[in-house]
Length: 397
Image 1: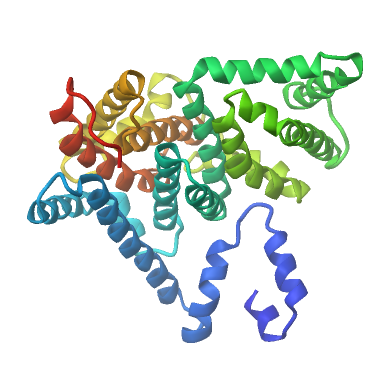
Image 2 (image 1 turned 120 degrees about the vertical axis):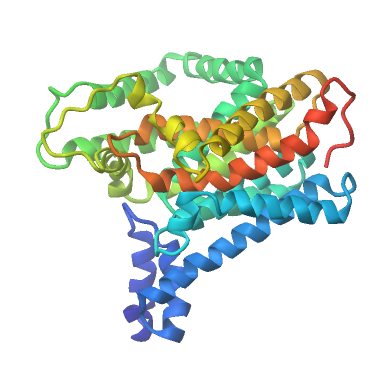
């Protein structure tokens, strides 16, 4: 990429950005000005990661300050932030990956930024937060594509949890539209062919034919859903589907469009996850997918991430309590607590990561993206939530 810029081949430079099927180029774009100044150097790349660590710490402090501002004295906030720093630096993944050129710390920054933006939208619901959601989603997705996929699945699950009746009503409305006339039912046939291409191994095609068939069917189904939502947007908004339309327009749609512009990007999504799954597996070794296999991620983050084992369990349990208490306040008082949103996304992303990324040897980078958010969520919960259980909710931040 730098060679194209030096030689003023801007079209080739742009093409490299668009032609990134398995590895997004955001980190490369960040590296370009640094490498122009200091030369191509691994140490400079490590310094970029360390800069992201500093941003992560400052953002954590800002998040805590916004949460407890007006509730605690400033000197107590300083003590609290110091304790958070101690917890963070008790984490092996944070210590290891802060001094490498890998993307895990960068992912942690943008993961927390994305959750912060989504929290702002659900609390305040104004245009500024929508653009923040879009910006943070793109940054996270273009750090690593699986991060974007997990975020998309998480926000869908989050909206379903908040209002399952509304979610099912939207799905029902879409299926009524499909079955409204015979000419619309071809979508069902196409969707069944799409599933058959995935589920039936006997359907073999030469070369990449099968992948391209999947890709074109995926484009058709995606465009059909996009057109349905935008054609009926006013009606959907009147029918109280505002949150679903928002999630689709500002989170799912940018990811879908980026995947659709390159067939290899679509077909490589599954292989990227498969590569992560086989990391650390000896060739010929049989993987027993028992209970310990599927709980590996949770056991590791609870017992092996922090230098003092019980800290991991305390944070993990606080995250669960934060989610339960936050969900209680949402159902009873329609109050959105930041610690509730944080804890939900930590738990659901960890679940998706556990299902998708479990391997014989745990992929530690997967954990380091969530450690910081877990610490901040647990801290805000302990300070803000526990003393208020059973009391009327205060003003929403």
